[in-house]
Image (cartoon, rainbow, N blue to C red; front, side, top):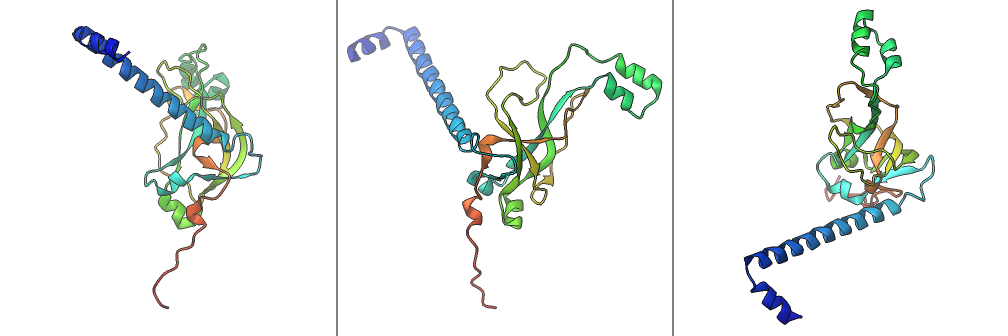
Length: 209
């Protein structure tokens, strides 16, 4: 086998390019497979265990990440005639807006809401509790105006713990869209049913009173 590979490798530049291409392809497929495995494992931690009313927490990674590591999302949909009729605008403006509606567009999706949190905020409040579980979904996709292959996403609808969530994002509502419901969604892969270990420890000051 090794002799065959050696002869094939020495067979010319094209053979070498093909060989390198195959190695890169296999490496890429391995990374995707490993990533999907980790994601499925993270989802399995809570997906079939959580019940309405349960407390949801962030995982340990979010407690050491200095960026806004937990962001709530909102579901959006195209506006319709009923939405326009309820708008507080002039009748001619309603007619103009109604004429722009794409009745064939039924595309929904999740966009980032205004609310996010950070590890600093969690430490200030002494908890990684992000909210109370309401329901779950595995059909919605992050919203995009581009053609995209459907991926496997899992979301929890939560009643957010507003003590740790802050107004951190400028909402980017696509033109011609509105909120589909009042729910807040978070990705399942960053959630836990237990308080993060960082908040089970209490810091003791060395200073004397």
